[in-house]
Length: 443
Image 1 (cartoon, rainbow, N blue to C red):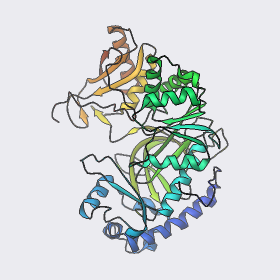
Image 2: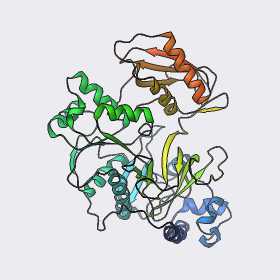
Image 3: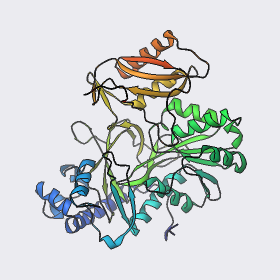
Image 4: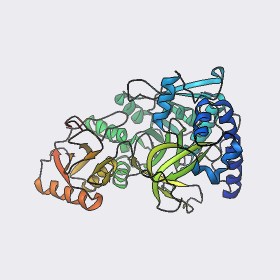
């Protein structure tokens, strides 16, 4: 583990002072990009900006072009392995993470030593907000590599926990550790938390007996869904705290506090956040209950800085002070725009569908699969949704109709509900896919 020279801070900075410091850091970062990044030098030149001063400060950032994931993939294709957006010397790259690669070719994420320290500091802020502290026993299910979630392990160690790394792929070992070591906390995806409890119950162990106090969930939407959260908290007798980040910006950028009223932004001083309309790209004012897509700009990144990077995370935000006393921006993730479907003009997020279906517990167990009839974003109604019943239940037309009515009322599209026996849908020891194209025809 890398030793962090400075302690992490979980205090909320003064908004005015933070804005001024971020603006100054942003101007320095722009000069760095123009000096060191062929990618951004060309991108800004196309926008008519040849010098950092011409771009202005954060108040004028909305005039600059976005950066997209497809552009980064093309950049790495043109100049492998790190791309034309690499802004540090190769010799300064200390850590390299990678994505799974939707095309079969992974995307590489380089970090300098300074970048790694910043990521660990951000992650430490996020997870400490949940009340996790030095000496707490913590089981983690994130593997150390190659994915960025592995760096969360160093954030946990920076907090000073008693770390019990299990990783993915060994639920039996994990449940044994819960039973014998009785840790205070567990870190995993929401869907894996549900699977652990189901597996343990099938093997004669009630996870409430583990004595867990908190479950730290990340990696997929779900931890913020009210019904899913309630079910997990009832099942474990523990509190659920959500975290969120993304590889190209920083792992664990957002973390939930003990008030459980949304994830606080933990990247103050390291990144600037905007909210935009995902369709038009226009800025959306940051105010209570506003929704949109998060956009990030690094303020001190060295290896691969991002300028107005479109996250594809669709969120609801709050700017009013939290019950915990902090005034940092808070969010709940509604879903990924990458997973969004459009049914006769209505945007449909699979995670939102699951939240509606979960209202019908205990008749259903929480596992669903959205099964489009064709490839592509646009779908014709009815949209097929597979819903698992609890163990021993049989399909009931009245229940299917009630779920379809609730979906239509809440999400404004017509659904065809297929009720399936318990155990039919695939389980996962990491992330659960809610979109299933196995029965889809061509677009």
